[in-house]
Length: 490
Ligand code: SAH
Image 1 (cartoon, rainbow, N blue to C red):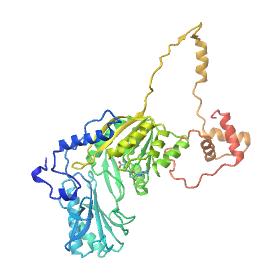
Image 2 (cartoon, protein in one colour; image 1 turned 60 degrees about the vertical axis):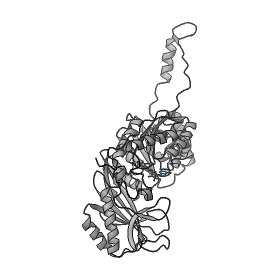
Image 3 (cartoon, rainbow, N blue to C red; image 1 turned 180 degrees about the vertical axis):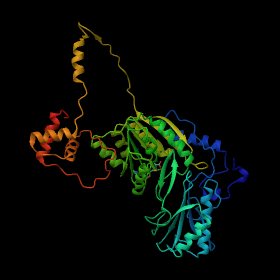
Image 4 (tube, helix red, strand yellow; image 1 turned 90 degrees about the vertical axis):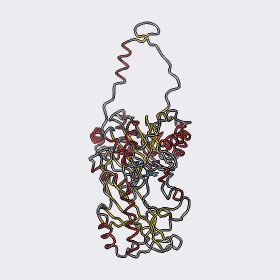
């Protein structure tokens, strides 16, 4: 196994600040990472496992970014020195994918030979801003995203042809236009210059499409370790309604879908939701739907509609979740919450909020996705607090004082027999017969919703309402309400 010893240190380590390779052994690092997790969540969780380390902790980053700049008239690609906007030219990074690093070097040379201007942050002039290379670890597909300050790209076709000639492994090239003075890498306009405009990767036997701006875990091998743990923690039996909140391109939820009744993925980024839908289709997953929305808002709405979730899986960004999200999650009364976090500090804060809602952290599994950096991913299983105490009651059956007669039990059991399921069709037929008019199922749903009754969405329900909900006319509301009473729904 290739190793990076103290004597073989990365020349950029002190300046670039992205990692601390060579400073300590990987084993020491894993022990420190566990302590870091304990420091932030130990108060809320007594069972914290050892960190699941990487088998090969080098060149694991499947996504590599570099910023273009100039040092003494020389075009360079690199990273900003920690906490500054000074560019450190980096080549041959120990944690980045080697093919991606080589492509970045080639593009830097091509910028010189095509005499393209690199962007200057201070003046706002120049064209080439950033490069982003993403690779599907299993498929070996490679996407190159060239971020430019304007749509005009002189010699574009020749540039693309030459890049492809030198790197036949590239499967798609995208131009992203970012004309704003911002620290964000990607802008919101895109042109596909070659290939399909996205790459695919295989994770736990499922195939995923990844677009330039979609989130995808950077360490594919460890993502499988992480997801397996999350699936185990969710302890699904095949019946549950699972919510995959902050779902990205739907990876976690889809990996769980075979073991769940149905899964609802909620994600804010529209492009990621598009990818997620395509991914579900491609993997023939029929019990998962995707909602393009703010997770808190959507879950609050679900709870107001009387819906529930059995398990919530949540994987928020580094900044963690919010108090409002925690409240919304608790209002859906899940029996388990699986929290996937990449930041122990915000995780600790959020666990305190969950505790207030009665959800306690039972077990935590840290997983190392980012060797030689400070970051560590953690999965926490939460469940609702068990009862404080148990009362034992002895009941005697038979005739006589203090005893429960057996015939009374039989009588009561009849009362508790499950009621037949009342379908929308039964309600429609009853109303048509009694009132002589038809009612639309949407009206029945609307009345049920307004009465706070439980709603069961079909797994293929549309996620965004195309038309605002219409209030049914008064006489129909009355007929539906009466029918619901007749069938003892209310
Ligand atoms: N679970 C996914 C993605 C996790 S990254 C995976 O493992 O690949 C976090 C995701 O949360 C990002 O895709 C981001 O767009 C999304 N996000 C951020 N804020 C959100 C919000 N308020 N509601 C829903 N999604 C949000």
